[in-house]
Amino acid sequence: MKHEIRDEKDAIVVALEGDVDLQSSPDARKVLLDCVGRKRPVLVDLSAVGYIDSSGVASLVESLQTAKKSGNTLVLVAVSEGAMRVLQLARLDKVFTICDTVEDGLKQVRQ
Image 1 (tube, rainbow, N blue to C red):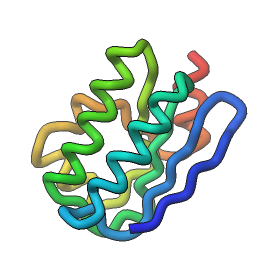
Image 2 (image 1 turned 60 degrees about the horizontal axis):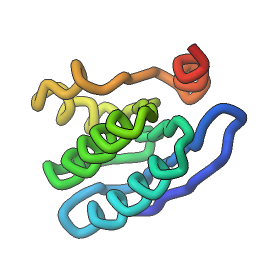
Image 3 (image 1 turned 180 degrees about the vertical axis):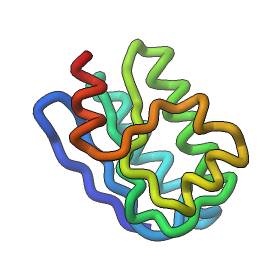
């Protein structure tokens, strides 16, 4: 798994790429929690994630919970078909705010 962090005007965008699985999820967790700790809205771009397993999903959920506890926002954007299937199976598509594009996510955090 690779990741890229970019600063946008209103948020931090974390783009994950590759498989987010048992091997790579500790790295994803560290990156996500670090970004959430910056006290700015976080957009997680999952467009280049081919596969995500339960450990990857757990990293997303922990990041969301941490964001909410600190009054921050975490939004999933451009979720790949494979990742969306996993989120839907776990019914987490009802828990996360999910936007089709990074631009839509930026609009969401501005509200």
